[in-house]
Length: 105
Image (tube, rainbow, N blue to C red):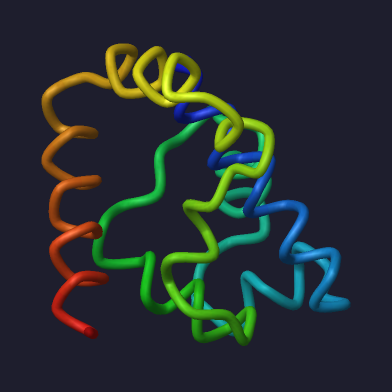
């Protein structure tokens, strides 16, 4: 599991708990098995890109909130380390998210 996957899994769990939802409730809203949500939050399975907007909507947050890893925003070195740990698929995903965020301006 990459650092990015760990951070995303932790952020997903944090936001779900802040939204007052159990894994079962989130799974029901998304039409997936509870085990799927558990796997996402434990970093065992990656969230597919098409599920990200659905997850954000179910949690009542904008998509970008799923990618704001507070402890990694401190220094350029930490951000560069995170980016360098991504595989090609993850880089494309992040690139698409960034382009989507920038298009909101």
